Every structure is written in structure tokens, then in C-alpha cells.
Length: 170
Image (tube, rainbow, N blue to C red; front, side):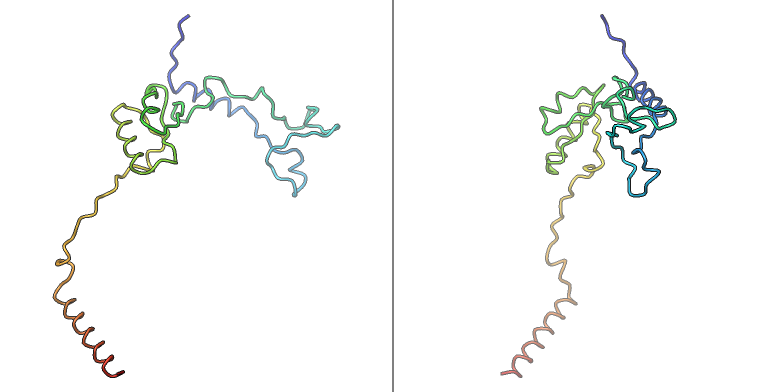
């Protein structure tokens, strides 16, 4: 059978609609006791109302709230993320459906090299902002330009003062 081609934004829209319907799961009784935080914990008590799904109590986390399969593991841009460490891994990335994320363990030079290669292959890079600027080469400045006539006069005066102080101590 042939697969239907889905627009890259459709899974994102489906995920957004499903997320809108999904309740916000809070830890049971967190509204009752200050000492209990709101982050979800599975209720395990024998008589717990949320575990028994009693009417009037908030819903518990269950597999029925899982996102749609086509929308799972997608970046908000609509691409699937692929972690890239070198050019061979970058060559395996499909520019139509996948986006590259450059590994944080790489140095600046290798990142820039991968960025250029991705640009040539039209691959979307997710963490491009971190490595956008190339390192600027420092311009070699002649020492003569740095030292002006005023500074040479000041240096000479400082040396004379030091010699006078040393002469007085001896």
C-alpha cells in the first residue's frame, strides 16, 4: 500500500487539539494540604478516590491521554530531531522530515563546519543560535601604533623617578 503524505503542520495541530482536551494532572489532595506539592504522583492507597476513579474526583494519568502516534516526538517546528556529532551523521538526515541538533559536546570549530555543511544540504538546524557567529580573527596591530609619543615620555619619566628613589635608598 502507498502511504498518504501528511503536511508537516498537521501533526502539530492534532497535538495542540489533544493537549487542549487533556486535563492538567495535579497530585491528589495537593489542594487540601500545603505540604503536598502539585507535581503528579500515582495514588497507591487501597481506598484512594482518584485511584478508584470515583465520580467528582480529578482524573488520573492513564494511557488514554497519550498523544497521537504521528505527532509524538516532534519538535514544534514539525521536524523530527536527530542528534548530530559528525558529518556522516549529518548526511543521514532527511531535510524534508528531520532537523539536526548539533551535540553539545562538540567544539566551536566543528560546530561551524557542521553548520556550513547543513546549509549546503538545506538541513534545518535546531540549535543554530548558539553557533551563529564565526570567530573573528584578531588583527595584528603593530606595536609602534600602540606606543605614542606621550606614552614614551611617561615611561621615561617613570624610569627616572624609579632611579632617583633607588639612589636615595642606597
